[in-house]
Amino acid sequence: MTAHVTESRHIRSLEPISTAHLFPALESELLKLLAALGPEDWEKQTVAPKWKVKDVAAHLLDTQLRKLSICRDRSAPESAKIASHNELVAWVDSLNEKGVSVYRRLSPRVLISLMEVASRESAVYQLSLNPLESAHFPVSWAGETESANWFDTAREFTERWHHQQQIRLATGKDKPGIMRRELYYPVLDCFMRALPFHYRNIPRPAGTLAHFQIEGDCGGSWYLLREQDKWRLVAEAVAEEASRTVIPQEIAWRIFTKGIGHESAKAQIEVKGDAELGLHILTMVSIIG
Image (tube, rainbow, N blue to C red; front, side, top):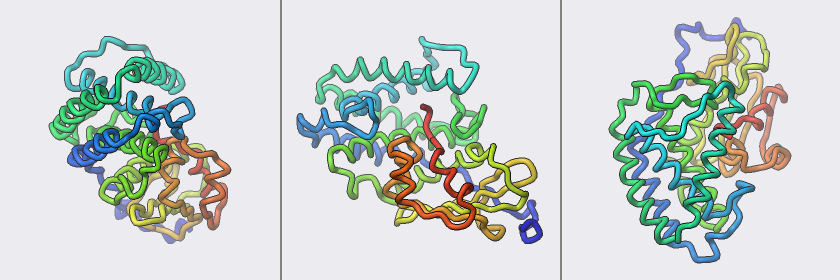
């Protein structure tokens, strides 16, 4: 297979993802969604086991206010020495739990009014960032210890998107909702940036190519190439594919955010070729937690 791989200097990597301009549209959809919920909707269970709809909404408000405070205003009253990924997850989970416990006490009307302000200020802040400068936080689930702003902004966009989609799924307002190409494709593209890190311990000969296809109007194809000592996401098929994994767009976001069981997801995808290589994506998590 290696003999047929395009020379590495001619292999194109993926381009940065542009999402800063999309926040106003996504946040507008969220505010309209929350305003349309009935009293019973706020207590419906979501695919996040510990959270009902109001918990997710409280989390969305908490994290937006927290990020503005830390990143824009450089105010971080809570800090911790993080020595491992597990410690990072535990710390973030603790912050999230505290935030949800505070903001779920609010009435829906008050919660929405605060979110209107936070969403507006957050959108302005994201647009103010130089996308190529270093972000305040690295995208840890992609294995990075330092990330560019464009990646952290895209990560933030995926957080806002998938939590809103959790609410939509729980309340039966998920179609078409925000599963539109202009909003969903950037989320998928960001999630898939975790592939090289997720596959780091899966050995294959140099030149091995894995093809991952998200099926649907919002989807696309991503190609993972094995180089001498690492995996690399490339922009096109540069060799004969060793495996192809086809995932319906309806469940793709749930796979990468722990919103669907492994066996249920496995039953809905298709893998051709190297099964171990193709199926390993089902354990990929593109969120902290």
